[in-house]
Image (cartoon, rainbow, N blue to C red; front, side, top):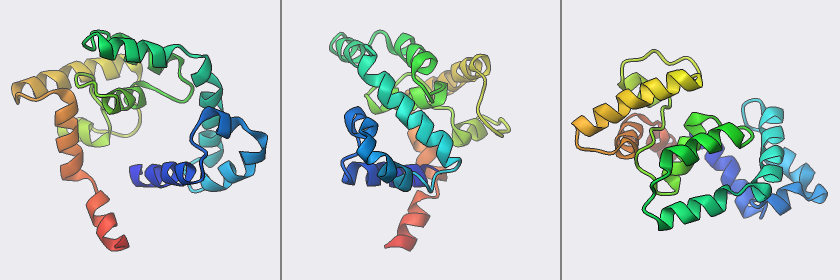
Length: 171
């Protein structure tokens, strides 16, 4: 599934539709609908994309992240929780992924592979309380392996992802 999202992201970027201003420009709406049409539940994804593009410039999160990064990343969980609560279309998993892409290492991205690694049956997204409980266990497991949660997630994902197989087929 991430592969499809990456393709959509790449296509939006190539077509310079990767800023809130470009996404919200009415002349780009048709292109955005076309480029995101391969997503699962494309209308829902498109709606979330437009809502996020409206929200992000009004949010102070980018400034708060830059300030926290300059101050040793001490507000990692607070910022992640705020992002998950306020950003349209984001829950704990996507907010945690966003944070790890910003260089934070202690939040856990509890996707299908991470949950299976921990022995949980994974059917869909976790409710916030379940996420936080399982995140704590994932952090303990990572610590027992002398890894950060983000490092452990990357190792699990690389081992289990079908990306390499799909990539080889497309070359």
